[in-house]
Image 1: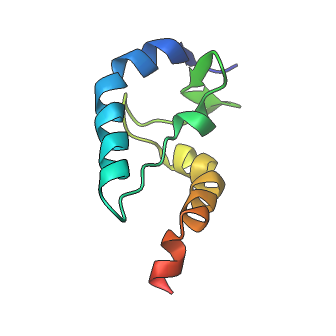
Image 2: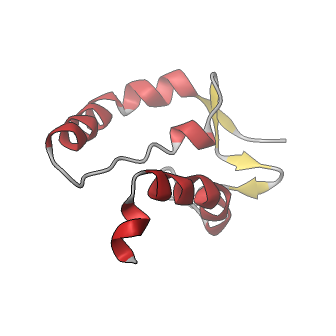
Length: 88
């Protein structure tokens, strides 16, 4: 099984910080915001564990398994944002 929390609850809980981050992203060059919800959540739920693996160490920090899970998606974000081009 998997552990999950309603996405709407977490989005409401994080509303103000996310708004501030997205406003910063819009107003400051070279600021990019990666939203892990798009990869850790579906339309209704955000998952804290999948396939018997805990994705978080605590209520805010990804575990090694969680990091491994989002890595391909995060790497694609870095590529599509041009961030990886900056380090080459």
